Each structure stands twice: as C-alpha cells, then as structure tokens.
Length: 191
Image (cartoon, rainbow, N blue to C red):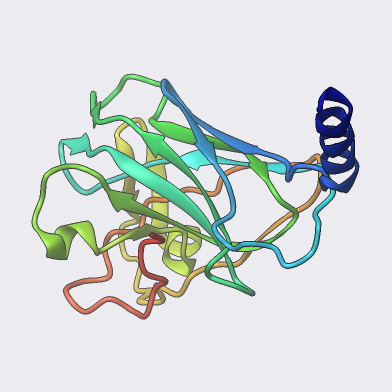
C-alpha cells in the first residue's frame, strides 16, 4: 500500500506543470497580491516582470481608496491590480499620493483606477484614467494634479503603456477624472 501511494505521488509530481508566477502589487502603504484573471490554456513558465508607478489624483479634498488596474490592451480578461488607501490631501506636503504595481507581465496595458469606498454605483463605475488629457493638460502638484490654465484638450482617450521585462515604467499618473458625465468607452472594472 505504501509503495503504491509513493508511486502515485511521484507520478503526480512529474506530471505537475510549473506554477504560474505570482504577481505582486504594492501600494504606498498596504500590500496586495494580483494575478492575471485569464486562465492560460498551456503551461506557463516564469517570465521576468515589470513595474508600473505613478501619481494618484482626484478632484476633491481627498483621494478615495482605489484599485489601480493595468488591463491588457490585447485581452481585457488579463489584468494586474493594486489597492491604495484613502489619502487626505495636504496642499503643500510632499510626497504626492502614488502607487507602485510590481509583477506586471510584459505587454501593453491601459491604466485605470476605480473607487473602493461606499459610494453610489455611478461614481464607483466611473474610473480615473491615464489618458491623453493627463499628458497634455494636467500639471502635477502636491495635492494631485490640476488642469493647466488655458488647456483646451478634450482628448480623454486612454494611453497604451508598454511594460517590458525587468523595467520600471514611471509617471503613469492616474489623474484624469475630468471627462464629464458621459465618459468615453473605458474597460469596465475587472471582476
């Protein structure tokens, strides 16, 4: 009986595929674990991952607790995420609220943030985004980002972000919440 059990365990161990790399994502204070949501159809091997980092902003006197997502441009079922805490904003006190997402598989992503606090569904489903508007109009400051005086851009389209193995992609600021009541077609909050 013992010989059969040992044989079964050895066979199971030989057939076992290597585990997928676990991606970790960290916020300024808390630590979170993230994994791609898509189930691979073939065994995966460990791949060197990258890092996304940037500032957070919100048009208020605080930044609510958020989940920042890197959602694959090629397959929205594949994403990485990190949770961030609520930040009170002190107008002249650095450092600015930020996030760092580690363990992101190489690829191209859209970066969005959704609120995690107890608000109405409409606000919870309206993301903050890294967009053309961020690149063209938002000026970073200690309290987040504010629109530059005279900026006339109305382009709130998402900016694809390419992550390469073992590289950190900085300044992916999730600060655009200014697209108005009718938002462009953004990926929904991953579930």
